[in-house]
Length: 63
Image 1: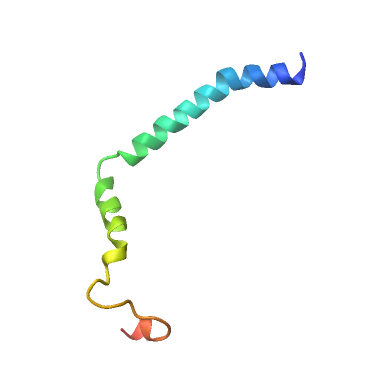
Image 2: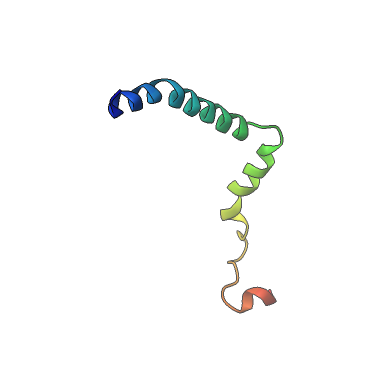
């Protein structure tokens, strides 16, 4: 069997199944219970220092 045919058969069968399983796993990971709080906290990062700018440099540890 030539290499192209072997790789084509592998890609059409097992690789398709593996990539579909990976896709389903990613969707389940994103939609898992309790993850919405984490995503909400990450989404609010740009607004954490809305009242004043974030400290810069050495003064950041003192503030």
